Image (cartoon, rainbow, N blue to C red):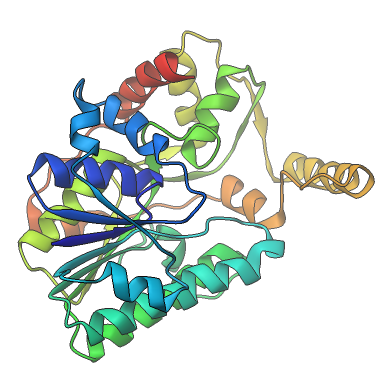
Length: 332
């Protein structure tokens, strides 16, 4: 039996569909106020009989920071996919990210050791990998601390996972890039599709690694099936500039692409204006220094390791964007 955390998030939803389609027996943790309709929405993008497939999931109300509820959820579990995370670049959310990303992961590791879980897959991020001064960043690139609070908490969470490895837990870690996929149009890469659909004039000047959500979950599942443990894998199909990404999304939505660069100077001006707007309106800030740095920096990630281990063929980013845009047109 398989347990999934973060089942109402982007990776978790698509992973649940893959597991159910492969006739796995699945238990998924959800918090009291979580919206399970999001899962059905993702399932509906794959299949017409999505309600039937959804009904095969055993949902358990719980929280990764509630050890008692985890003990209930872990009954008869043999494998775990830990996808739950709090994603934010805002330092105001640091305490919440420490609680969920670090302490929650520590709880998952502790109970997995206690329950003698056979296999454990942890979903990290390329933000938890150091940036190389050479052309490509890979799994061996040395970590250097930075001001991104999300990166810090995910790196610390990885340390908890490696502690589990040292105590005998069979673990595989994946570090996906920017994940493209349907179902979540207000956060993550889905927010880009929403923003672009409303018309924008500027694009960020940075470059990073992108991957289709289908590839992320397929690789996770394959690594577990092949019993590949005590390793981490960067999951990036292609390195694209944000300009190229924004233009491709615009083209797929039959819109004019943004034509102006939003470089670091312009983004810092926008950051200051956003701060003033937040100060006087009381609204949550839309920009922060970490998000500005992330969107204007150039990073190149190597996928050589996962290619060599699995001989994997990634979905082209062009194709992933086109498919996601078609679903966006139907759902949004």
